Every structure is written in C-alpha cells, then in structure tokens.
Image (tube, rainbow, N blue to C red):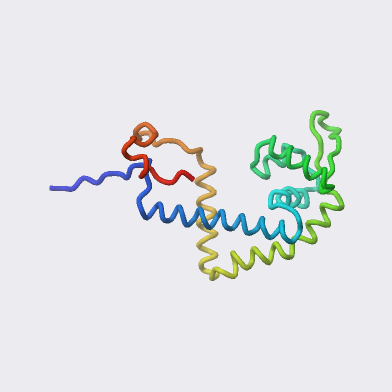
Length: 183
C-alpha cells in the first residue's frame, strides 16, 4: 500500500526549520546591533543616521526629497520625516524648498554630515569586513550572496499570504506553544 505524503502545516515550523530561523534571526539582529553599537561608540551616530547620510552621499547634488528617502530606506514616511528632523537639529542635513513641487522639500547633506561620513566610514567598513568577509571563506561568501539575492527576490515577489489550500490562520489552542516563533 502506498504511503500518502502529507504537506507540512504552513502554520508551523519543523524543529530543523525553527533552528535555522532562530540562527538566522540571531545573526541578522546581532549584525545590525554590532554595526549600530560601533557607530554610536566611535562616531556618535546611529546606523539609521548613516543610512540616510549614505543615501544623500550617493545622490546627485547630495540631496533627495523625503519621498526618495522613503523609497531608498524602505521606511514609513513619518519615520523618515522624524529622522530627518532629528538630523537637521544636529546639523547633519539641511532642508531646502523644492521649486519644482511646493509641497515637497529637499534634504541636503550638510558639511558636518559629510565630515561625519568621512570620519565614520573607515571603522564602519573595518567592522563589516571583520564580521562578514573575514569570518567567511570566498566560497561561503558566494553562497551567502546567492541566498541573499534569492531571499530578496522572494520578499519582493509577493506579500505574505496564505496558500490557497491552507486552513484558516491561527493556531488551535492546544497547539499554541508549537505554532512557531513569534519573532
């Protein structure tokens, strides 16, 4: 008699899947926290501030509209606006009127902002090199690159949604503890 194969319950992770997810989660969060801590300690800026500053450094004229920063960072508009306001108060960026669109304004990299980037990049790059490149062989780097690209494509392909044949979402009360990670 043939044994019918059952599909895994999409609402739960197997023990191996949970181990992989947890290791990935700790690595990703640890990497972000390490980079942020290094920047805070050495340069007095956050990883979020550096992300905005680097977006401006890479842009023509070293300026962008808030909506462009929203697109580049993937943040909500309110988060970008609050971040820019804090950075403007610290002298890292300047706001300018936008002649093309009176409802918009430009966010421009200030001289102090540029100085911060120039000062921060060498140690920040060294931290990235130590954690990411020095810890992996060239072959592992190639595999990580392929995995990163594949996961990015999967995230961009479609928002999270239930498979067409899935049961209603939410664990049954008896299975609440084994429903998978909440992170």
